[in-house]
Length: 192
Image (cartoon, rainbow, N blue to C red; front, top):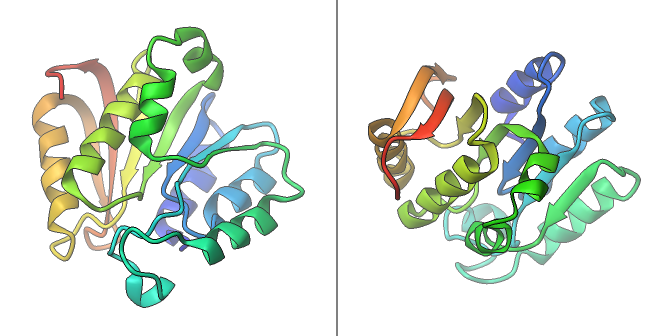
């Protein structure tokens, strides 16, 4: 599902940012595909295994841990003509394991703008945070956490962990606390 507030933020921010974009959890892929069209000189990275986490079952019609085949088909259809989208169909954990120790690849990705909207389970969000730290640790990063509200306690808990363990330069609530923009300056203060 398109996160309209974060999309508008990155739509404006990417005009001036020297960094590429990463979206963790893309559902139908509307946001990354629109950004890819608008910014053909940026690489838009996406990570999504297309597995229901249990938080969108009413919308997807799929039970927790089942494949989101319709969403994958929608995404592939949207991105068919876009050459600047690089998708990793895997979990954040699997991607983190695959990229560790590959600093040259990480530097080439040049990510500095991130939307975290994947699994809404606490442990998975901590993995998302660690992945973002690894990919962006050499520069300031703009991160938006989706679903930062009371309905999604695990997201709020993970963001609070992030606040306590990382150097936050600035944070800005967006849209009644549903989204939270964090501008961070690494380094990591404490390892996950």
